Image 1: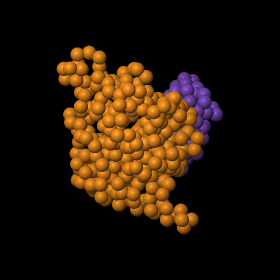
Image 2: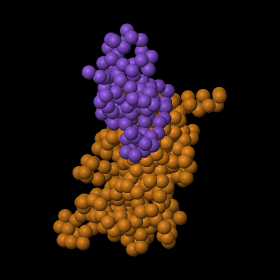
Image 3: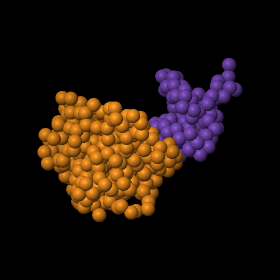
Image 4: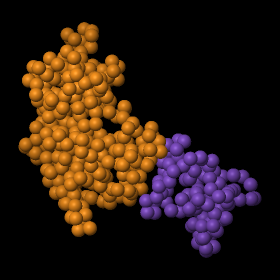
Length: 310
Length: 94
């Protein structure tokens, strides 16, 4: 059963009363909330995801609800709970859905040790994964959103899950988080993309989410194999620059962007070295999205052509 | 005055992975990871077998005397100090 099988009101009633089990790629999340905007956000941004009302198991048990004090009335706030524990300070109620998104990211980053977890957007074309690690503001989510609307499959805009056994990349397709100017950039560049409600004045500035393509959600069990590790950087007015990095430097920069490398110990080291052995590494600077898309499409097609000829 | 000798730090359980001319070193005990050049790797290999003075190390690395007496002495010493900073080698007094 998909989220879209429910009317908005039915979905809200379920999320409010017992909660729903939402499948997002590798994880199942139990979501419970009495806040309508959370249910509405799930209805629009997760409409193609599988949902189960009666499953016994969920990786994360999340509740997004107002605090039980006077803040319910005066400038209402929202709290994020995971397993009844609240790791964050409350936010304004108008940020309830983005809070759910950020909180779910936090759950994945702090609880996942079955995979090497990298802070990176990752997309796939012809079976090959393009991994784009980057700090906030590097333009990785914008680039990811543009690629996803131009022939690449969304694996994740934020969290790359690398298998410890064979280095394959497990998809975690969720709404793509767009911030500030990138919201209008993607609206202009990809008019067909569905972008949800804009939340103003959040901790991250103005925030909106782009819905993951339905086909990419359906293919969320289909792994991809690493081929490129690219460190993107958006620089206003910059000419496109694509500079090879040595594998050693690529490995060190990848480790710096990993959430759980040290925790995984030798398994983390092995996963990084295997991934880098299979990948070409680059530093990438850009300012014009269309040029960036063309460049990556050529890169992917060249690799496929080379393999076909071989 | 006798020359200082150098030896590898007592680090058990390390992993190496080589990418062409670069070498990734991983200390399983501390999770420290370092990217080393060919020369640094060669120095660690030599010092893991026995402690050596700077001149002894230069000889083992196959440096001709002319080179050894030029800037390379300083470069080699600088490299050893960098390796000491990241706890991969240590100096021992004679």
